Amino acid sequence: MFLVFPTAFYVDVMGLSAASMGTILLLVRFSDAITDPLMGFIADRTNTKWGKFRPWLLWSAIPYALLFWAAFTVPGMLSDSGRFWYAFATYALLMVAYTVSNVPYSSLNGVMTSDGIERTSISSYRFFAAMCAAFIVQGFTLPLVSKFGRGDDIKGWSATIAIFAVISVVFFVITFFSVKERVQPPKHQKPDLRQDFLDILHNRPWIAMFGMTLFVFTTLALRGNVSYVHMNYYVDPEALRSFIEGLGLYAAPDALQHPGIGFRALDTFGLILKPGDSPTAIGFSLFNMVGSLVNIIGVLLAKPLAKLFGKKMVFTVGLAGAAFFQCMVFFAGSTDVGQLFLLNFLTSLCYGPTIPLLWAMIADTADWSEWKRGRRSTGFVFAGMVFALKAGLGVGGALAGWLLAFYGYTPETAHEPAVQYGIRMLVGFYSGGCFGMGVLFMLFYPITKKRELQMSAELEERRLNDPEYDTPELGDAAAT
View (cartoon, rainbow, N blue to C red):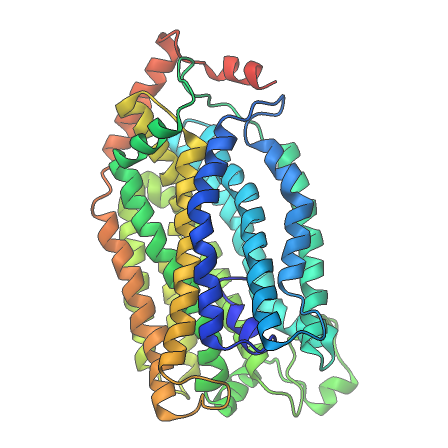
């Protein structure tokens, strides 16, 4: 939601300026510098019969869902400043709840198994499901808003997010009951927040991953926000209408009189263009759905590619390809709808394999710390990456808002030549350039395929032979 729809909701529905939206998205990031490492510190020191990380999924589920709904709901009778502060407060509280949930959730990848290939496999399953969710959320949100709102977008957003929030609680509970923590820190390790900081500052792969994650999520937030503006105000509506008609998603008069089962199903989710309708919402939904479907293919390819070439090689090449094709979006004309969809397809195909590899590689940086320094703080390591992720979301959202304001964007001025040029620059070279910065950080990531195998083998030997380590069996016993 916060990769794609902040501009659609905060600017076009809530009525904030693009600059105000950018300020909100960035200001909240300052609190994350405290809450994220603090949550990692707390999670590493949590000891329950369910483990260190699992219980936080259950404890945070309902607060997260309520704040998720509140962040996309607009109370009536608020002034302009009231809307700003309401948006700021609900977004800030939502990000705290996200931290409490996501830091432990992400850390599970590092403690469910110590095997690098299994971690890639776990991460691939996770992000296959995540891309299915992205397909639904990015594809159906605007049509559902229109369907539930019936002309009242505020009502439509509130109803749509309420459904997503309830579903999130169900899935948090499922996750809690279906995972198991196996990898434990060395038995002799003492809690030490200062030492945790020193460990990551001396952890070269962690630093490389932090910088790369920051720029990748800056790109995703920038690209997501500006893609909505690009589709809504740059792409020619009649060219988009023709493209949708070519896909068979146009409701001709005879189709409305005798709709088939498939036609009725698509119409239920608002994916049928009817006479007189604007093609933008459906076009943007289809654009996102194509990207999500192709990302799913990329996620499925991640494990075999990583097994063949290593995580670092696959990630670096994939991210470089995504950077190139994203830059090419700048050159697509307003009527080149097919070209825009093709570039989206190619960008997503390159980026897709990197999605699960990111989190598997972060788990490897926790191994690196244990291998090099004899200490393991999985929650703290992942907390830093969650902070980089959220900082990227904040910076990307802020850049989108501020740069759109710099080029003079408002819904009323969106078709002026200077604004159109700015939209193309943001969705093309700015977004692609941030991907490119992520590639540079990957060049300094030292865990190659050969190094990963060496590290895994030596750590396994230590755990088997050193009495100061918990074996997986002892770790399971300690957790229960």
